[in-house]
Length: 303
Ligand SMILES: [Zn+2]
Image (tube, rainbow, N blue to C red; front, top):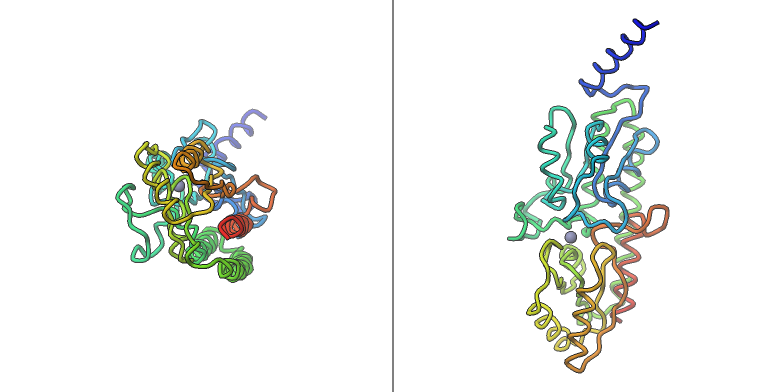
């Protein structure tokens, strides 16, 4: 009996060392942001087990791996993450793990850099908030389909079919978003938010985007930033500014106060989902639901 038990343990440990996917066990996939978790669940369906590290309202710029995360990561067959230094503090953990043991895919780093928005702030030299360009999210989709198909070729038809369904939904989303934004006159397309997450959104739909805290929430807005931006809001006659679900509200409230102190009024138009989706199980807890919610909130408040 005892001998048999030890043998089972030895075989089990051999399997875990080699990280080969056991056809009888679901493939373990770890994802970072809620956007990527939602995408991989859509493509993987019931064939893969997706463990998202970050939940709703979690700021990826400041996120540090917990002990539980390290366990999830060490059991992973694949890690999908945004990259471009969005998950600043996690990349070190990934690098230590080494890519020979686990397949690591930085989805944002597979994009053609020629189309990316440059940034001096991030070590990647690019603005990492690429999911606000739906076309890029379609490229993420294709990359997830091809990675899963490579790892689990026996399910490749299913991944391709799930991918095709999801890409169609993204096309429908793009059409809907364009139609909603078309109702907002171009001179009103000024988006002031807590941090600079919406540059790709602005580039796609002709919005002038200004973030109070810059590209990362790791830098605090100074008094001068608040003063400068409040004058900009008054000069451009901006009706509404926006808080974000993953960033504390106080910075935007300070901006609203600064506008009031100059004798003008600007409303807080709502809370946008920038670097994290809404609660799991809600419509805003999906990438598509989040995008529609944001666009409706922005357009209704700025009109
Ligand atoms: Zn951000």
